Amino acid sequence: MPQIPPLPSFRGRGKAEPLPHIPVPTARAVIDCAVYVDGHRLPGRLTHAEALATVRAKGAGFVWLGLHAPDEFQMADVAGTFGLHELAVEDAVHAHQRPKLERYDDILFLVLRTVNYVEHDLHSITEIVETGEIMIFLGRDFVVTVRHGEHTGLTGVRRELERNPQRLALGPGAVLHAIADYVVDSYVDVTQEIEDDVEEMEEEVFTPRNRLAIEAIYQLKREVVELRRAVNPLSLPLQLLSKSPELPLPKEVRRYLRDVTDHHTAVAERISDFDESLSALINAALAKVSVQQNTDMRKISAWAAMAAVPTMVAGIYGMNFEHMPELRWTFGYPSVVAVILVICSGLFITFRRNNWL
Image 1 (cartoon, rainbow, N blue to C red):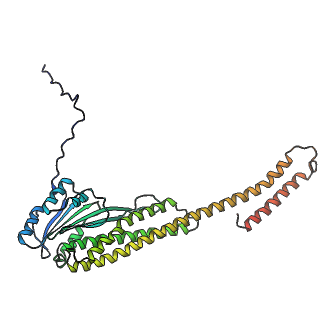
Image 2 (cartoon, one colour; image 1 turned 90 degrees about the vertical axis):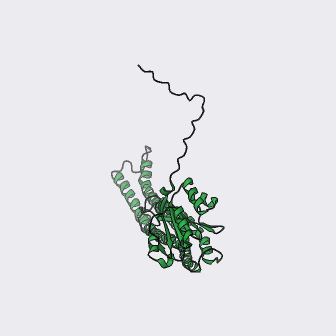
Image 3 (cartoon, rainbow, N blue to C red; image 1 turned 30 degrees about the vertical axis):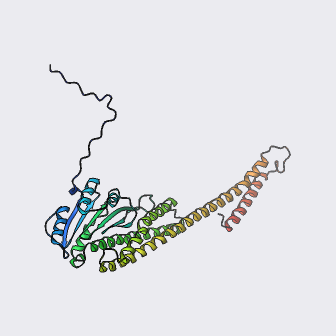
């Protein structure tokens, strides 16, 4: 019978060494990569390195590379090709950044927070606003977009731009404007949905005999705060992009961005109004609960007062003294019951007139 070799011993080796990380090809994170010359997309499918080489060989056009949730190795490959700064690359990989605009020599780095409205029941306590991120690296002859989140797709934006070669001919800045406009438009849509929720909650709170859980209002208020954190910080980057002539953007693109800035300002003001309305709604709901509790206490007190009359009479006649009035009178019991009914009826009428019952 052949001998089975013994298993190798791991005694004394301490912790097992982690398996080496196998880099995932950059192409796995690439959603689309194209070269645009004079506003038209060149045919063929190129890698990001081949696309950039093509543009620089022609001396015209630009590359638009779209990535979705790249890891460190994939982003390092892209950074080496396009010459991206390591600090911006780190932000693009780890995400969870506030909206901001940074400049590294001739490359702009813009962070946008995206939002998506989640359908829900008004009385449920669930997530209402889902957030994601889009990072944009803008160079002289390229634009790299990095997306985080499932609702941040830019395929529609790319198709819309490709149907308008005149705008694409403005260069990478046209892509930045189109993405910013798309993100701000999504803010408008989400704020409209939130406004409908606020109005529905107001109707629920002020409708008699409707009981809306205060927790649901708190949940919506918390989601509005999340929406404000995603939207409001973008104000300064948009103002810089639309008003700073020293930034590498064509004048025509800055004009378009001023319109985006106006829309963003309107959205930010609406979100601020939501916060105030929900705070007032919470106070109104708490006041309604307090009023209802007072009403319930008055009703309980009224019934307790009426119940106290027969209880008091029964207590007095239950003391078992030998000499008590009307104990031996034939009509004593009916008389006492009649007195109790008269007093209780009088109390009932009085409480009813005073809206206690």
